[in-house]
Image (cartoon, rainbow, N blue to C red):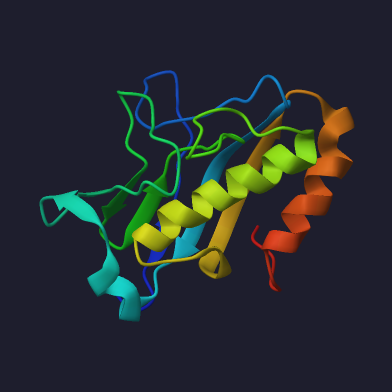
Length: 153
């Protein structure tokens, strides 16, 4: 791994090369997350796979759909599946509105990043997709509390 490798979640394409998530009930979906890995955390990575591509698994985030992984570590990058506001304990959407579900989705992403040896403090890029822009302010208020300066792009 190179110095300060980065992590990234890539959105799905029509070819299905990566994963995505949509939360229709709260009109919020996160699709791209990038963070640098903390090399000191490398020994705590929960993975399976070969040296070039390792699967990240944690019970602190909801399980992915059968054709996705929660995360993949590949050449210093952590690719995280999109998350929705689902509780990993109940496997149900959390009660409340867009803000509550945004917080849960970001907590889920944080859990996957931590299982890969990274964290939200290392996020470089994070894309959030809303199905209804009237929910932007509520989502953004919560999103802002999860990231320190400098904010992800």
